[in-house]
Length: 91
Image (cartoon, rainbow, N blue to C red; front, side, top):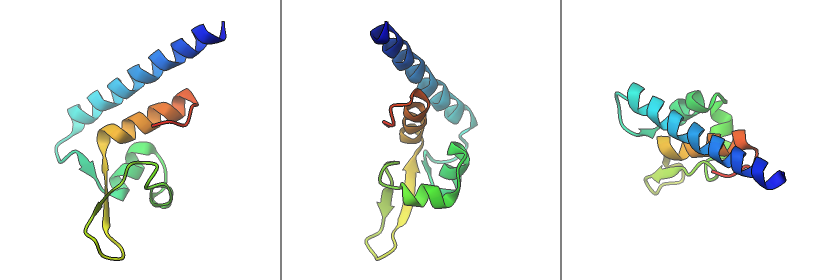
């Protein structure tokens, strides 16, 4: 029974990722890379949370100074969110 439930959760998570990606594509009038404010809005969290979990969210660092700009890929954020919904904590 647990295996069937796990498989169902995985399928639901995949559908969530696909749907979020579709919504992003439909609403996307700009680049696929988001800044921290946009990423926070997409995830429904604070900018502070986005910065504190930047590596976990797949942040791309622009520049090589002490405080490079961070950008986030929409698709990776959708996968992260789907993983959190599924409860496995994965991207």
